[in-house]
Structure formats: C-alpha cells, structure tokens
Image 1 (tube, rainbow, N blue to C red):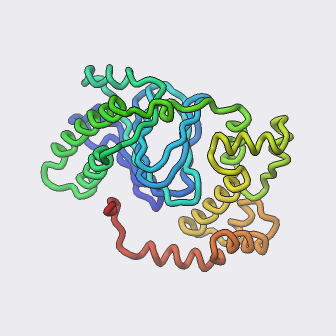
Image 2 (cartoon, rainbow, N blue to C red):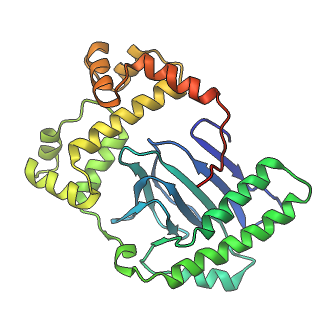
Length: 290
C-alpha cells in the first residue's frame, strides 16, 4: 500500500522471513488507529512529532525518538497529537523461529516507551524501507540481516533505558478514554465541552483538568487541532468539495468552516488545497535527512 499518508508492505519476503509480518510508515498528522488486537509483536518508532498509545486502560504518551512495544493479544490504540508534523514507522513480527529473542520480548514489562537514544533503530527501519523500495540485487538478503539487527537493537534499547517511570505509562482515566473515543469516532466541529462533561457525569472544569493532565494539552486545543487536521487531510488527500468537507465535519455552513480554517491555518481552504498539491508535485524522499 502506497498512499499520500502511508506506505506499507505486508510479508515483504515470503518463505525467507516468515517472522516479519509487515512494515509501514505513517506520514499523516491526523493518524489514528482504533482499538485492535493481533497475534504478533509490534514495534512503533516515532520519527517526528508526538502522540499517544494506550494498552487497555494505560496511557503512554510518546514523542520524537520514542519506541513503543505491544505484545500478542494486547488491545491497544493510538493517535497523533499536537500541531506538528507526525511520522511513525511500525513493524509487525512473530518470533516463532527465534525463541531466544521471543523470551526477551516477553520479558519487557509495563515500561513500553523507551527512547532510541543513538538513533540506531531509526537507521535500521529507514534502511529496510530503502532496500524494499529500491529492489536492488540481493535486497532480500540485506533485509533479512537488517530485520535481525532491528530486533536486537529494540531489545537493547529497552534493557538499557533508565527512564523507567516515564516508560511505564499512567492509568488512563475512564473519562479521558471516553472523550478520546467520542472525538475520534466522529471528528468534527460539533463537539461541545459542556455536553461531553454532562455525558460522562463530570463538571467542565474537572474534565478539562483531567484531560490536560493526561494528554498534556487543553481539551479545547485538542478538539480544534483534530478538526483542523482532518480538514487539511480531506483538502489535500481527496477531491471532495469544500462544502462537502464542511458538511462532513459538522459545520453549520461553508462560510463558518472557511472562517475556522483560515483562522487556525492562515489560509482559505482552496488556497491550502492549491499549495498542498503544488508541494506534493515536488520531488520528495521517504527517508529525509535528519
């Protein structure tokens, strides 16, 4: 799969790398993955921006340079956060043919966020994608070696990290989890903080305080940014009209949508679409220089 916002390869080397299920890169500020389970391990690397993951009821904020690990059977979800560019690499894998490494991954406890201090995991991820996309002679052999290297580098990062308290995560309050689910299930301008607070039986001030404590940003800012980023995504990545996008995001009129968009982005919707598409036509690199 190769789209504007994501590049993914499923089982890139059949029969030679059966343990490697898939690899992908997300280049989308509005990225969000709902609650899901899988029967394999998954490592995510945040190359740019910030966001969050949650395993069951435990919240794990992540930022540029962080690794995040999930184990087989764990229900988890995640999303980008803030108003900066977001880039995420992810690798799904089983270790049925590498029992020594499998034990090591199972021994990783609740400390699921750890920094890639030397940038070695990022280098390995970028090198794998480069080999897969270039298709040079013997690239499958190179990918196999890089994949094994990646597995070891991730385990070393977890075994040497001393920031145990940050990586362990914090309990995600049911109220915050409920708000996140509502906001992401139907992104738009129609959400109201007072109404959200009433629905989950909290006062407005209590909800805002809890949300900021857990997510690191004010609830109103999070709501505006989520709506704005979805609007940018639709303007850039679809052919929908401005009026259709405004309706999809629950604005009362195209005029109201245009005022909101220009206030928080600095451009009118059609101006943004034109600039975004012009920029897309310029040569880009999947692996930009740091």
